[in-house]
Image (tube, rainbow, N blue to C red; front, side, top):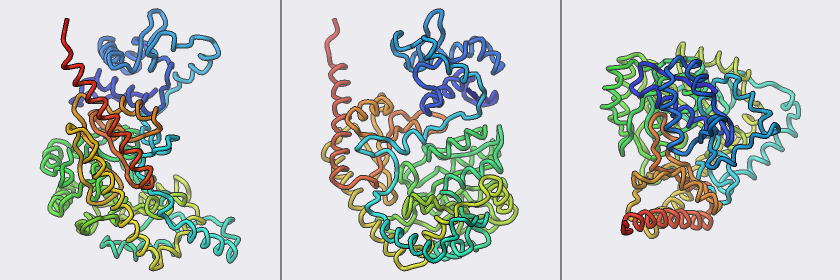
Amino acid sequence: MHIEIHRNAEVSLSKQIYQSIVDHIRSGLLQEGMQLPSVRELSKQLGVSLVTVVKGYNKLEEENFTISIQGKGTFVNAEKRDMVDTRQEALSFNWQVSVQDYLPRSQFAQFHQVPEELHLSSSMIDPGLLPNRYLEQEVHQMLSENPKILSQYGNIQGDEQLRNAMYEYLKRLEVPTTPDNIIVTSGSQQGIDLIARTFVGPGDVVVMEAPTYPGAIDVFRGRGATILTVPVDDGGMQVDILQNLCDKHKPKIIYTIPTFHNPTGAVMTLKRRRQMLDIAQSIQCIIIEDDPCSEIYFDKKPPASIKNMDQYGHVVYLKSLTKTLAPGCRIGILAATGSIFKRLLAAKANTDLGSPLLTQKAILPFIKSQRMIDHTKKLRTALKIRRDLVLELLSQHAPSEISWVVPRGGLNLWITLPSWMDTNQLLLEAKKQQLTFLPGSACYPVVQGNQHLRVSYSYMNEQLLRHGITILCNILQSEISSKTVYKGSPSF
């Protein structure tokens, strides 16, 4: 188990130990019944006092993440003593915990694909809204005309025809680049990983929004970065706070989702985009502009990308076609310039020697045709209908103590509950009714955000969406009612 601690951080060492172990548990890296290192072992491993480790372990037990059993040790998620199985066959793999790893967390994977029928947790698009039949025909035709494509490697940078097509596509989005400055990636997630493994090492400062996309948190935490956070409001990342952070610390990376922010749906104003770019230029750092779905707007087009204003190569722009076109193809692009581009291309070569050629060729005819434009328009209409349905259901059935942000585009809706509520606990109840959502804690790099949750209205059809949101509202209503009853009950 790898625990990264930063002695100069504002968060106490005991809190860092607590948070790291919580991240391991929520990521499934530490499973129920597994034994934690002894206080003495962890104290020696981290070079901290016994008291510091004890404080971290006590907080874990207070919050029900662990239980300590006299004479046996501290175990994960064991609410009752008899849940810890000490038989030899159950303990035969316990030695593996002693093998050092460098995975501080991997929470996003826990919510990406889940078995529940009512699937509100992952911002994927309903397969029924995607051009599956057309892509199937294109694959058949491509293989019949060129069967050798299955035995060919693709270009490390990406298929040249696809890069040309993506250049034209990005031009319609007013994102300036050239085919020679594009790298084809296995979705945006690989783009984030390439940047992190190229430019981020232990202790390097990365600034992220709070909340933000969990998959990016997992990557940067995995590199040992010191993550600083900036709150998000209706206008996106609060740039005045960003400026103050950058005055005190010199970040290497600023990671942002300025358009239809994941998870809140906020859109960064044009003024703030310019200010962020000015800050990056003044401190010589990289901005990662993650743009998963700026095409999916419901009212008016969002402001121009930060990349649109970038003259000196500070912005690395990421765009994925995974969500809006073909999840099974896992195609995304990374656009950068200068030495940064060359180093990222070298990282891509080291990672996989290039994305699969078959999937690149499969989506090429669609991107080049009018069908792509028509498909995007239809998606906007269909997803707006689903968003409006969710807003209507929340207005009708959600408790008055609940609030939410109305998204102007994208795939997600961010819900805020009373501060005393814990959406991780609510998720356990929801799963009993075959419902899942993304708890807010997964979206925060540092603080917990337990009183928030994200629902995605893009994956389920309207009938299932109606059913799922109604169940969610009933769970929230029941939880708040029980709290009110408890508060109002007489004391004896």
